[in-house]
Length: 412
Image: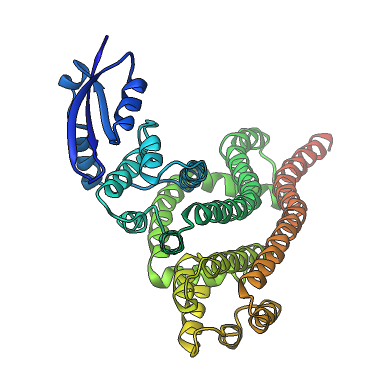
């Protein structure tokens, strides 16, 4: 029967080591847990001698680079930990169960670090606050509120619902922009292929005839000649300009300009604005429902709303709030948020149930987002077809005019 060497934490959080003789690793884990300890690492003798300490590897990886869960991985983690706590499992054992399931993703080390902090007596919210790249202020604040109220599993369930809605909104916006991006890229590639490989073939034929060409044909040949001869310069400029623009958009002024631009862009602005308002209302509702104070909730929403123009307006509204409860007036004063939204929020303040009112606002703008996405895709499809048809049509007509002109010349 194999012997497994283990490292565990006892109820006091102290590190203990030992060995257990069982049939397999799972039986070893059960034996350690029955003894009232939380296993940190369990390895069969022989494999353990050839391996480094798991905690040392974890510590090196944690300190060597910033670890971050992807949004979908965070949603899965939140769902699983919520289900485990709802089933009656303790927080330490739940985290240990997830930490022992190796997926090869950064989340493994993050969850293992949370488990180690918990068994040492650190609260879950404080442990999560050590990794702001993964756990936002919204996440940590709601966990802290759940710990204070003793309803951590309920808060985690609400977080799951919140992130599922946010992911749904993100997916809708992404899908709305993917189709036109694909069509535009394919159109540009097709046009470039035509200019570089197709038009020069016809040019050689036209030169052999030695006859004056129509103006559209001469323009087409000129564009083709410029593309073949100087196209490499354009590619180099794109390689330089695109990264420079991306870096510029990451600066404060760049983000301010871009976020303001998308809020004014036809067709797109409806999608972006609806997503922002839904995100704002849903996040603020979740925070208020879990007992986070209004001013603190506004500060968190400012950082999670995803648009610096709207975020700046929320910051100004937060500074205008005097009594810490009425926020519809300060939000309306900036004239950035739509009147319907601030009016609905005002009704919630009057009835004393802002959280429910914000949930209605979020649902309304999520429905509006779906409509705007449908309008965007419906309107953009014929526009792209017309633009691409015009480009292809110009090429075809230019070549046909030259062929007709040559035919007339030969007949004469």
